[in-house]
Length: 230
Image (cartoon, rainbow, N blue to C red; front, side, top):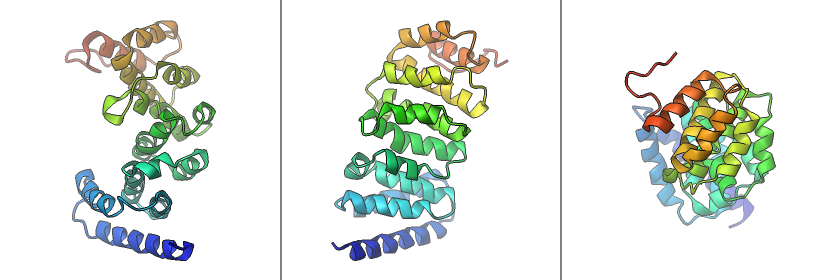
């Protein structure tokens, strides 16, 4: 397929998806995923380049629903996901400015690409050191696919804690919540390492992290019934 023909295909499919989204009576995630599954089937044999270009075009359109489909179309196309590198991830991350956008980006694209070593550790460390709260959250949430079995995680204590150490003293609520999530996922794989991290950084970690991760280690639950949330 020539570049011009590919461009026409990408625009046509993007327009179709936008029309389908506009026609939905509900914006529930389940309804959005119904559209995504349909197009994932159509694109199953499409080149990675075509899928990535389509996803980028959707990302330029307004509304979280376009962003979600952009990320999920790539995440459910093995070759497209496997083609991601630092530059393409940075482009896909443009405009992340809510926990939903960040978590979709990190769980569907950034985390899996990092897990498979398609991007270097220094990229995620750079995000963790960003002045932008959303990129710092993206760095932490990117550790979740390293450890979460349902997301393909095989367990990676060193890389998880490398990012968590950078942000132990961060008090932005979005980052604190992400740090708790990251350590709770690690606790499922390596409880000893998660416990040792809490002990080592007890004086620096936010109370939420200490409480929720401590609860997870002790009971298997973030907030067991009857526990204090102070």
